[in-house]
Amino acid sequence: MSGPLVNSPIVDSMTHSFDALILGGGAAGLMCAIEAGKRGRRVAVLERADRLGKKILISGGGRCNFTNLRCRPENFLSSNPHFAKSALARFTPADFIALVDKHNIPYHEKTLGQLFCDHSARDILNMLEVECQHAGVSIFLNTKIHQVERTPEFVVRSASAEFRAPVLVVATGGLSIPKIGATPFGYDLARQFGLAIREPWPGLVPLVMSEEDCSLYCDLAGVSSEAIVSCDGQEFREKILITHRGLSGPSILQISSYWKKPQPISIDLAPEREVTAVFRDPTAPRTLGTLRAELRKTLPHRLADRWLDARAPHSWTNQALAELEKQAHGWVVSPSGTEGYEKAEVTAGGVDTDELSAKTMESRKVPGLFFIGEVVDVTGHLGGFNFQWAWASGAAAGRAL
Ligand SMILES: Cc1cc2nc3c(=O)[nH]c(=O)nc-3n(C[C@H](O)[C@H](O)[C@H](O)COP(=O)(O)OP(=O)(O)OC[C@H]3O[C@@H](n4cnc5c(N)ncnc54)[C@H](O)[C@@H]3O)c2cc1C
Image (cartoon, rainbow, N blue to C red; front, top):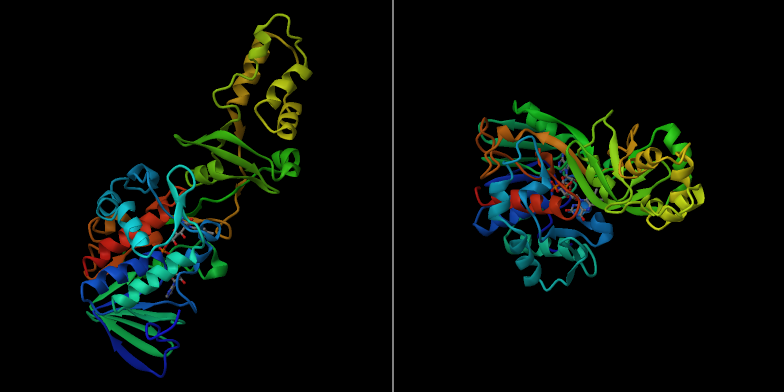
């Protein structure tokens, strides 16, 4: 990024006054800045990293799954499932697509309503940067905040400068991927101002198997299969993937957001298939070979063999076969944990939605203080929903500044 938009690094100790300060130049912060800037507000984005939107750049395998055509409130977790509805209704996938179209960014639907850039996630970041420029947004990179005070104006201090504004928007994201700069800053700031936090946990994250299960399956790392995975009343039908430490793949990532130790998860390895149906034919030999051949029609051969070896029936009675059929549709796995924030695509939990206005994202206790994006206790499913929440919550706040 170049030009007058970036004021970085900050020179000597000086005070900058704005109508609104936005902490964090990620998806939510940039959208908020654009909306507020378009309405004539003098807005500054303060970003601790040396560039904007690092997570946008690595998202969707570098192609940014920027929204989902089938976005519904049910695609989000929150202790208040109604909270996100208002913002999502007032800034929809169609609104974001209109912006993408305006910038002639080519994209495609991959699967299940997920929209990805044809070329690169950089297209989305460039678009946001250009929109910021048109909206007159000031951007300060390499600006690590040391202190925030309310006097009643908000005073934000970095090592070399002071920023003042009557409005402060916190868009500093969650704890996922510390190596690209995730910090607990947003939660700490919420606590400083007396706002409640729903204890964060890693979401959309691979699960680690118990030692016993890992010794049975982890050498099959790379093997994947379609399955229905369920836990805590939720279920997802997509691929599972065996990894060196346990399980991943879209349906595992989805369920991980709902999983809490020591709950087991249940995996239907043969959705809508009856793996023992062949044995209704009285001439079918009731042998492991027949069963293996049947299971191999549904599962990758190595997984079919390994899974069956671990639970070969002791007898070939109808009851034993019924039990095996049941297990194929309900393979119970008790993960020992997750791969944590290092691998998590999002952080679930966060600033309690009871603390915020659903329409504007403003704190009920502290007028002028807003929280948007991932730092809030609203977490999307896999598939472009987290960005849609970032755009929608950012727009909701930006329109209220
Ligand atoms: C590998 C990966 C792939 C993903 N792919 C997708 C995808 O394809 N589709 C999708 O919908 N979601 C995806 N996500 C999730 C999505 O990236 C996030 O939900 C989204 O970026 C959250 O936006 P945000 O603006 O709230 O936070 P962030 O994008 O995390 O932005 C927060 C910003 O605040 C800055 N910051 C932090 N602390 C401070 C501080 N103290 N002072 C100043 N600045 C600070 C950070 O440097 C960062 O730039 C992915 C996440 C990961 C990790």
